[in-house]
Structure formats: C-alpha cells, structure tokens
Length: 533
Image (cartoon, rainbow, N blue to C red; front, side, top):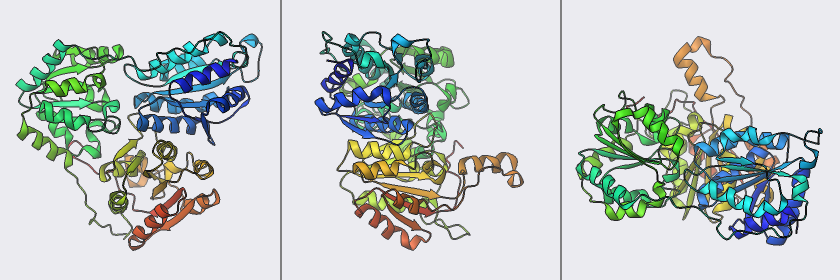
C-alpha cells in the first residue's frame, strides 16, 4: 500500500466521493489510488476553479470539499480561493503535490515551500514527513477543517511519500467534527438575557446561514423571540439583500452574535452603528475572534463564550422563551425593504438588473428544487437582493469575484436534481470561462446568466461617485459574445437585448439539458441601497 492509497482510503472512510482537481506530475499516484475506492475526479481547467468548486460543494453538502492540484505554480494558483473559503467559513481540504522530501534544497522540479504560503489563509497547513502517517494526517486535516470556526486546510504531499510504501499505516475511526457546545449554564444566561431585552438581535456568521442549516434560523428566531440574521456579505450593514438592516442594529438594546465576527461588516461594533448602551454577547469558537470581540467592543461586551453555536442550535431552541413579536415584525419590515421594482425603467430602454432578476426568479419558482449562485460585483448585489431560491451560495465576505461559474459546477455536483442558476456580471464570467468546457464534459448542466453592462461596474460606480464622470478610466469592457464562446465550449448559448425575449431565452436554457450561457445586455446601475448607504 502506497502513501497515496492510505490517503485516499482515509478520505473514502470519511465519506469523500468526489475530488475537484487539475492534474500534474506529483499527484498522479493519488489519481491512480482513486480508482480502487471509487472516488470521482472532476477535472477542471484551472487550479483556482477546483478550490471554488470544492467550496460550493462543501457548503451545499455539509461535508469537507476536497480540491487537489499539483506542485509549484499549481499550488500557487490555488491560493486566492483559500482566502475566500476562509472568509466564508467553509471546510475545504486542499491537497497539493510537492517535490520529494529527499530532494529538499537541491533544486527539485517545482520545489516550493508551500506551507508558509498558505498558512495565512488556512486553519492548518502542513507537509507530512512519513507515508505511514497519511491516515492520521488526513484525519487531522478533516477534523480541523470541520471543527470550531470551520475553514480550509492544506496538506502538501511530497512525491516520494505519496509513492512510498505505507504498510502499517492506520485509518483512524474518528474522522468527523469535534463538538463544542455551550454549557447548560451559558445557554440559560443567553436565553434569559434575550428574554429580558426589549429589542434583541441575533447576528449569525456565514456558517450559520439557512443554506447550511436548513430551517434552523427560523426555528431559533421563533423560539428565542429575537430576529436571527445571517450576515455573509462584505457590504455588511449595506448588504442590499438585508434591506434596511442598519436601522435594526441602531435600535437594538442587546446583540447576540452566533459565530459572527465583530469586524468591518459591523462597523467594528462602533457606536456610530450601534447604540452605546447596547449590550453584546458573543458566542465564538475561535480564540482569535474572541480576542477581536474584546478589543472592538470593550466594556460593552457582557459575555463571551467559547463555543460553536452550530452545536447548540437545538438546545437554544428548546430553551427559548419566545416573545418580542412586535419587534420581530418591525425588523422583518426593515430587512424586506427594497429600493427598486421590476417596473422601473431607464431612459436607454435597456433591460434593468431588477427586470433580469425577476425573470430568473420566475424560473426558480417553477423549479421543484433550486440553487442560486450569486457572485459579487454590482450585478451580483442585485442578484443577492432580488432573487430567492431553496439554497444559495454567494461570493462571501472576502469580496472576491470570479468564482461564480465554478460554484455552479460544485452546486450541480452536490445537487444533481436541482435547477441551478449562477448570476454574475460580464467581468466575473471572464475569470474562469473555460470551465464551461468542464461542465459540458462531465455532464453537469446549469444556467449561467450574465448581466452584461460592458464594464467593471462596481469600480465604475466608485469612480463616478468619488472622482466624477470626467475621470472614468480602465473599467470599460467590450460587447463580447460570451454566448457564442460558450457554444464553442459545448454549452447552450442565448443572447438577449430585448426584455420581451428574456423569458423564452431562459426557458430554452433550462430545457437545453446542457450548461447554458444566457448573455443579457443590461443597463449598468449601481446596486440597490438601503438606509445604511
């Protein structure tokens, strides 16, 4: 048994059935080992795409998403998405090929000290030193990715160990998450504080969102009597999907955070966004984030508990005392507030982002099971604010764009029976356009909708606002026919310039049975705004 076999058998024992990967010399033994355990390899066109796919797959399955790339430049190409996965609190295991241990310092092929490179954007990054440890090393990586504040981990796999004899190596039996629940006393303190408050709010981090915890937030809100809000956008209190949420925070007299960092998305908890008299209770499994909460909140922090709120949702629901009905209704009104409608038009007569999103929503409403992918940028914000599906994946708190097309593939792999839509701008789609070929080749049909305003609109809007219309530079894009290019990669393509043609084009895309690219010319409008803007 090789090191590669022990590694793959451990993954299989943990329930891993799919790896997103771009091949390379050093990881060929791992590919070979996947034959014997039946792990499927989704072979991508770029290393970063593999990590993005694994991130969406993890969020939608509740498992660790596994990505595998080769050494050197392959490992370096995978670095950016690790930051996105870290910010979205997504458990991803990145396996990278590596030069042989026995050739360290000698100038081996693609020799690169990968661990220091990935350490800042992972929970754990390490390089095994014995082939017989691959079982325990892999189990450790999986456990750390899942436990506490979940996130990505990285194992660099020296080629001589991957190919070495690992006879005697063991596969641990404990391969899952380590629970970190609140104590009964802490549960009681939290529920009593919420019951006594007049205007309590519960703010949840990305790993607590409804997609990853189906129905749990609604149950929590009903039981505790406090509005429960998941925050997963870099725009924070200006997240268009949360309407006028800033008004709710300004009124709150108690904020309980469940895995939500006290960071820039909350204005660092400053008294300019939250009343100085508002008390805070933080539930956070990560020591670094608990320290950050103490630093940013000071004496307003009434209690800080070292616990993973995901492990205590059911207990919090059971201990809840209800109430605060009028306050909950008021907050729901704030969050539902929208500054736009499908009926809005523009002087150019072009399709508006709201009209495009409404048409997509009509498709979602017809689907038995739906997944919505919303990338970032200005059109991504429209998508997040104006669409609603059974499950949703966004570009997350990192603010990085470009993963949307890859997320769609991960989503379809996770939910093959779902209708999957991925909404993105014409800037975003260019990052990983070649993955249309991947989707077509591996038979994962979903619909990519491009809100095409022929510019990097988020930055364009910044320039308009801060420098004026006479100082616009570097943000224009062309009228490229992305639909035709997608056809060349095996996808279905639609090009839409007239609102009257939009519904039929989306119908054809859904019914094509292929990955589809619906290229829609729109007016490039700023993202919808709420009272916090």
